[in-house]
Every structure is written in structure tokens, then in C-alpha cells.
Length: 331
Image 1 (cartoon, helix red, strand yellow):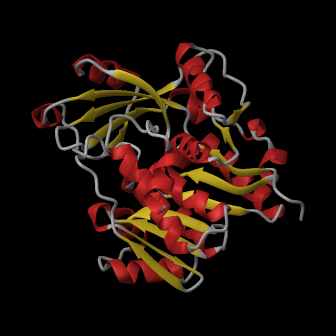
Image 2: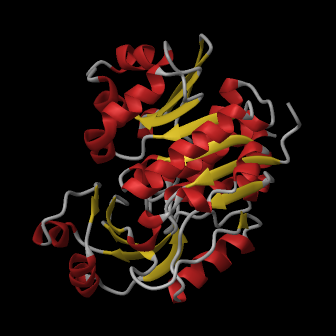
Image 3: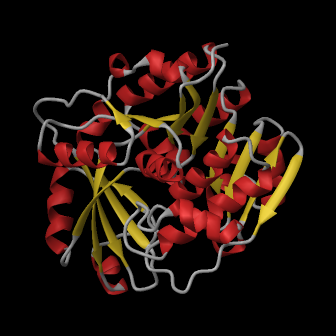
């Protein structure tokens, strides 16, 4: 097996986040579930955007956010995702390339437009996301660079993108390309609604030994396993997946890798401003430790530090110098 030339290649939604602060009452008025994520159509996107206050547009997407964190830490990364040939598509492509991430998926002509996520942030920092998948749900398998996948140490897949049929086929093909090259496959469950729709697929991938690293939060773990007891659910998945990483918000994070169990507390922050991207950046820190051969506890700690940086400001991309922050925290 040849040495990888890329640390992590990811496949995910190519989304521009539109973020606006709001009061809890607006969440109720609009019929949203606070802290959740809902897929919306074009008409809903127009209606919710009209209900928003002043907003900021920031390139996002779960897997792309993870890569932004990884690249900021010094990892060599590549992204596969579909944008449209429009203004937001140009914004997304510029932002991800400016972060030092290779992105060469051709833009898609015509409708639908580039995906966007309308995010309502309440005063407690909780984000309620409404996602219009747009062009991102039409990523064809033919757009995959299988040579690039084979040359990456880790293939990282975003559960959100499993919902549309076309990118789901592309991701299955990518898993085959990675495993045929002897590379590791990492998967993030993303959200409970994704598990409700595709849990059987995810459990089948796990049972078949197709997933090497699984990321989840405690609610997603319970949805996947059907276990209300956290330790029982963690043990159930760890029996089938070589490395399982589960975050528990203020209770920290756990991981089991080949029988080793590690736990780290949540990193303290002065104030939680916006939880958007916390899980994405936790995965970034952990994966950076993993590809650099660090131990399980240290990789978890890197994840906790990166997640704490993200929740201390609006937006799901790092604003602080993550390298300097890690050096300061870990000495």
C-alpha cells in the first residue's frame, strides 16, 4: 500500500450558512423544533429567510467545516461536494480553497441553486437549522476522484448527505474506493432525523465492517442503538466499530478504540454564543490527532479544544489560530 498524499478527504454538503440571532418566541411562531435540523424546500426557504432578522452569510456544511478545522491545524485536506454555477457556489468554492483545501468538483449548471442553511440562533447559543439542499443533493458518482480518495489516509463522510439518493450512491462508491486502497472510512451520524430515515443503512454498514471511525453525540447514539443507557449503547457500537467517538455537550466526550476507553471533560468557555459546528470541529480535532498518530485521550482533548473555540462565537468556521490555541492549552 502506497503512502497517502492527503490526510483527510471528505464528502459532504456544499452549503452557505445564513445565520441570524432571534428570540425563542420566533422559533415557536415559525413552528420549528429548537436545536433541531429540518430539510426545507424552495418555498419554505423563501418564507423563513423573510422572517429572519439581519443575517451573516458564512460558508458551511458539516464535513466542509470539519476540513476547515483540520486545515487550520495543519492537515492536508480535500473536499468533494456539489455547488451550482451561481454566486453562492462561487462564494463556497472561494472560501474552501482560501482555507487551503483542495476542491475540484465541477459546478452544476442550471437549477436548483447552491444549498443554503438558514440558522436561527437563540440567546442561549442554541441553533435551529433549516436546510435547503439545492445543488448539493445532485452530487453524481461520476464526480468522484477515486484516485484522490485512494490517496487519502481517511475518507470522512457526512451523514446529512446520505438522505438524497444520488450522493448516497456516490458515497457507497467512495467507501469501496477507500477500502480497496486500504484506507480508513470515518462516518458522522449528523442528526437524529437522518438516523430515523436511514438507520438501517448505517447499521448495515457497521455490521459489514465498512466503518472504521464513527462520530456521534449521545442522542444520535441512542437513536442508532435503541439503548437509553449511554454506556450500554457505547459498548454495543464499540463491539463492531474499531473507533467510536461520542460527544455529550457539557459532560465531555468518550471514545473507545480497540478496547481502550478514554474520556475528557468539556473545555471551559466564558460564554456559549453559538453551538453551530461544535460537533464538526470536535471531529476535526480528533481526526487531526488520529492522522498524526496521537493517543486516544490526546485526540479527544484536541476535539474538545476545537469545539470550545467554535461555540465561543457565531459561525462554524474557526476564528482563532487553532495551532496557537492548541499549543497554549497543551503546552
